[in-house]
Figure 1 (cartoon, rainbow, N blue to C red):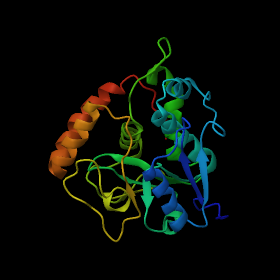
Figure 2 (cartoon, one colour; figure 1 turned 60 degrees about the vertical axis):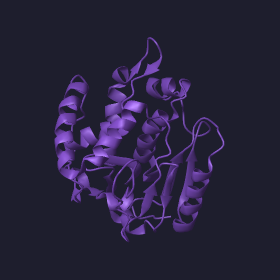
Figure 3 (spheres, rainbow, N blue to C red; figure 1 turned 90 degrees about the horizontal axis):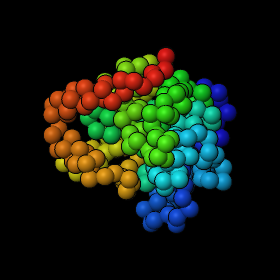
Length: 260
């Protein structure tokens, strides 16, 4: 494992809450990690080593079997406290990640205007990760309804994209750029070359991994939005982003925003 404090450590984190048997696609993805990350320590996070009562957001999400939302928080907490690379269980790695470990943090586009959270790398204690963690910790009362024990369905993609735009100068348009605090944002071809209902593929020789998007937490409304945004292309996405930004400004109006 990497010992240089200025590197992302060779930890490959993934979450598997609920105790169900992993489907074949997850087993295939884990095999790919073993192949292309042979010197990484692969860490499975579940009820045995992650406190599902760490806060009300995680506790209520877990009780409602919203395991994707448990992992939304868990991945950020894990990256802040340990550093490393987080991958969703349905991410297939097809290229060694070593060149990325020299960066302070990295992520990529899921579409033309959204940050992918299927793979995120960061040094331990990174400021970007800390800001996301602070957002969750300071807004738990708005992310869950404690009275009736339900989770407000706001995806980590929406949260992280919004925070990155407001606080770290994230830019729309599937373009490589570096955010404040050194977060390297890569175009879709690097980490998310294919997506549900996207009309084109961005798979190239630069691709590190493929996110298979096997998650079932999305409702019909969310799936329709994904289909629309992936069909309208870049210019349409710029308009869609502006409309979504208005909606997000309203959604997050009363939320605490961490300082940077």
